[in-house]
Image (cartoon, rainbow, N blue to C red; front, top):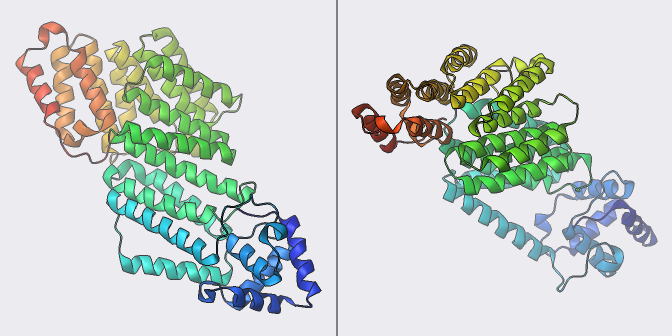
Length: 443
């Protein structure tokens, strides 16, 4: 637990009572440690003392609280009265042991996920962390780098295999957790770190859901939303809600639950044209279409288009990042809605426009669009051409058979086939194609 700065006046008073300058105080702290090699260099300890006593840094670790108590021969709970009573007194060595145990546990979890773990690389990480502590580096120096890393993920997510990105995200979440753990929860810097955690957790939830792991994904949706709430970023919170809703409808969660959550999210947005609200509205339109509420779905489609017209060009022109939302996203939503409502002509128009707008290397996205075209044909009673079109889309991207979104639409095509056609050789071949499985790549 961290201690607020007001208690640090007691430290300064006790130091001056003994006639010690900061250098002497640092020396005494190092001598009191039973593992002085694990402390930063003397000059770094001096800088920490000066920062604590000046109020520039408003926290102090448990290791240093124990050392101050030992040096001043004052009970820790008296010197730092904020922490709750403990059953046993922990030594600096025991704290280090606990941290090391947790680190080993997390590394073991990464190995289980398939992340690369190399002792040499782990050793380099330990050395780098030790140097940072000696330099007195704080987490603010890292925040810009991690915000940039999050933005990079938003671009690479759509073209990276999910099996690869999941351990990468997990590894980065462990690193970010370690950095944000040095900050007090009531500081702006901590809230900025929460934003990074929310973004990484959102991507991890999406990846798990895409690999048809909804149970595991659900906990990460919750984590992402909690972190976004702590960060105070309304747009990020809305974006997470929208992505969760979209994945929920592909996971075939009940429409009434999804609609209630969508309406709650719209209520949180107020009158501000948040980009994240566009994702929520797009999800709402799709859920309404699945529920057969055509007029409401069309009305929400108009709301999506209206909102997008109010968004900045930096959002609407970004076609490669998950954070972008422009005409291509609107057209995809239209294709989905009209396919479920059986309007094949409007589906085809929306698909053609969306394909023109979206990057050619977003293979999973383009596969879903072609499957929606086929689904719209079947819903409009053109079973033969619809099934053939869907079959060609799957054959062009076999990994779609095990990817959540594409697999769901592919199954929708089969479910929409009229009962009289279900035993035809064409439909039977399509059914076998879907059952054949495949390795999930990029979806």
